Length: 498
Image 1 (cartoon, rainbow, N blue to C red):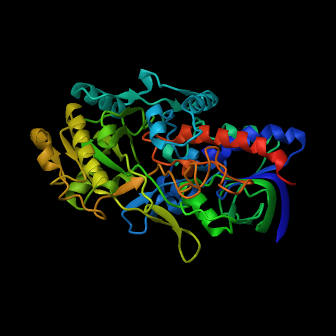
Image 2: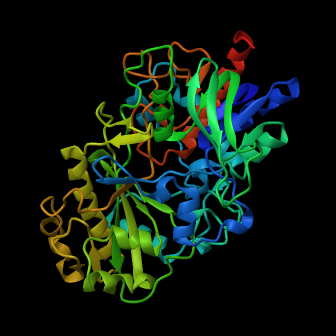
Image 3: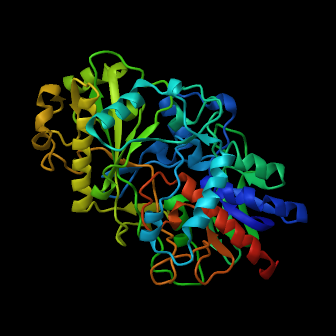
């Protein structure tokens, strides 16, 4: 086993790990050694082809098909230089003060979090797209919401020189999306931070971790030779995401008992709804996610624009046969809406380990979440018809299609009765919790600065810190919390033995 020694090791290079790396990079000028260990590859620019199945294999865990234990929900999270920021649409919202109050974490101040969020909004070139850059899929959603009197707003997004390819979720082929792979990681490397790709960290021990480097048949080879490594560090920051960070800590021999570790997972369970127009609309090309509706957040759900690719769309439609084929043959007429449930943080919704040591996710849908998913489909159907759709496909619909002449009967045509787990395709890309922040080791894993309770050299800096769901897209909040973690690591390093 090859031995390596650093002052700080960061596990993961996504929104959390990338932000920590950039913030700690000035320490390299003082002679400190910092490494980021990333499980996934760094793709060459020519490898961002936009081909759906190919990019899913290269950039996602389990090709984007990671399932909960009961197979009722698909979890999508990235594995690459830049983590999930590579396959994210770049929507960039700051956490509302009311949500932070519901989190109830002592020492976590909204003014401080907003200030840090605004720093990353500037770094990542976050702005609103101009009207000329909005496609029909997004414009019609906004028009439908306004017709119905629903509150609707435009997403600020982190792009620079967007060509409107519509491929955000497959890794931008035009280098426009400003994820950590484009901003924070290159800045950290330029300042002296070492980023090691294709490096899976397996366990963490006393100020050290073990890892294996193995190069896949794509992407740039790792800067380390393939093989097994033991990496010593004065401080370790875990930023592998809400599934892999808890799993890594569960596999490790930590010197403390943390009963909340792996628990309180939230996921914003999501469904795709499709409406069909009489005539072709612009949908596939252009930024896929430009508007959101938070009219119903107190009812337990959010609505967003989206536009997914043929395979993803097909698997999210209910049933098979002629109607399915007919709708898929009319993708040029599709309008699409993503609905997300605001789910509670329950101790039984958790990450555990399988017999192979890899993460297993247990998730139970409460009646409240299922009711919210049904209500969200009714609201989305009304938006489709207000925008001029001729027919709508809803997973909880009494039939494959609901036609415009039945728009007045939506409540009786979309109900809980046909909405069966395992039959509908529920997914999540907003994975939160598992290493939740809090004041007490009995019901949380870290303090408000991301330090693991009772372990002064171990920190967490990703979405697993969230004690409850964010009720918005979590990307910027993860970076703001990671910024706090980096500040605490800098302050604690002089106290930690070399």
